[in-house]
Amino acid sequence: MTTPRHVALGLCSYTHDSSAALLVDGQLAGFCEEERLTGDKHTKAFPARSLDWLLTENDLTPADITSVGYNFQPHRYLAAVAQLPNHLTRPSTRARAAARAASFTKVAARTRSRLQLISQQFPNATVTAVQHHRAHGLYTFASSPYPEAAVLIADSLGEIQTTTIAHATRTPDGAYDHRILDAIDDPAALGYAYGAITEHLGWRRGDEEGTVMALAALGDPGRFREVMAQAVRITATGFTLDPALLPLRVLSSRYPRVSERLAAATCRPRHPDEPVEQVHQDLAAALQERTEQVMLHLAARARTLTGAARLCLGGGVAANCVAVGKIVEAGLFDEVHVPPAPGDSGTAIGAAAAVHLAAAGTLPGDVGGCYLGPSYKRLDLPAEPRPGTRAHRPEAPARFLAGQLAHGKIVGLFHGRLEAGPRALGNRSILASPLLPDVVDRLNATVKFREPFRPFAPIVLAEKAGDYFTLPQPAPFMSIASGVTDLTRTVIPAIVHANGTARVQTLDHDSNPFLAEVLAEFAALTGVPVLINTSLNIKGKPICGTPDMALDCLVGSGLDALLLEGRWVTK
Image 1 (cartoon, rainbow, N blue to C red):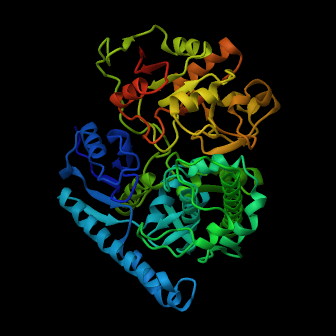
Image 2: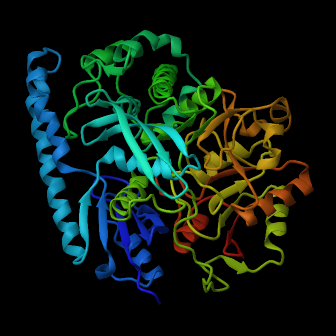
Image 3: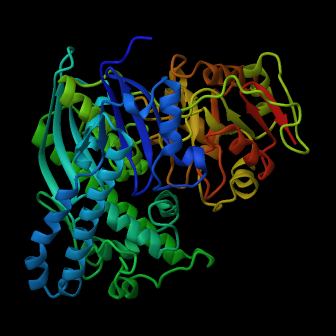
């Protein structure tokens, strides 16, 4: 084996959504989110299992790592200290000003300590702290096919930044230019606002914002429109938050993120076990509407500042597929790209790209795929994988699976390499026929164990997408909420959410030949080249990254069967 010239490791660790990415001589050798191997959703632990897989898969040891990129720079947190005098002079922020500055200083020190811990594990590597939004931006752009784009990153917090607009270009030989043209700093943070109200409504901040996005479709945004417009104010250059409604951020869970004044103007905090009422739906609707308005405003500003015809969107807020859909519909750009892992886990790829770029002077090779994690094709599965289950290998598995789905079975699918990001993209999925009248209720109640208003995403053969969806561009990573056609409303209304959209995944044969074959076989049986595709997990658990996790999901849920690397497992 030829010794690699440059081995770059990217890490997201110690905060949330830990992950690791490996570039070998400029080619992405793999990427994995640690939660998929440990079962601890949004884990902040060092991604030890992901790293072990990456090294083993590529016949490397920690001593072979040339450079390590970590997705935060400690000194940038100290910019919050410089804000202290301004916060002390304002009555609305004075009470939290000192605690805020102290908390950011503490996190800066912790980040320095984390870098030292990382250095100790890789004796021959240069460890580099990468600016968080630069890591987001590098991955977001490098994962696109564009030679030039505006890059808009919007999240809760990256050191001190929360929103950045950059102009990125690359040439065929890999030369790269990435310039941040504008930045918005905390305390103006769209992700902070969305997370704060998610928590106020009784769901887990940093995890269940998607639930609130779904709930919003059932509410009336007009009820709290003025309150949200005051809480999140649009300005000529971006937006600000009103600290009287969304209090100044302190990096500590002891400080609530929603003020008593905002609660009085909307609703009291909802306990997770309490019923969801109209007032909760209306607040969610107003929050979602304001988020869409701000994101459209930022996208328009990105077009003005860069002049680019295409947009790359990253950061946690880019996971808001309804807002992304609004940007696409607005026609501000010829095309919009969201990578498969737009949140913090994807910054591991961006951090690896940053240190490779520094060493080689070029962007790494193709990092745009989604099937980047471990596979288990050589799995030795016994005839009884779990007590009370049976496994056999069917002939023509794609045709067999399509037939089972056409007959109403809800099936877990585990095959090939683990996908990146929060969406199931066909390798760790639960599939079902959209033609079943009760399929959404059954999936929510007996398989996923989640709220009854949650919708399910469709997957469609790319060449047939125009028959069912109005989206004017591909959506390979299930990142965009699309309008639907009359055919969809008539034939498969189960995949249409209350707001008239569907978070569609368009699939071509080259990206996932097996699933494309399943769709084609299902279409041959039913006339419809569309399936419901949701993640292989139950509520509160991460997507199943290992065969054991998938078998546990089968046994512990209402799944009818699991197709596990070509074996049909039933209970």
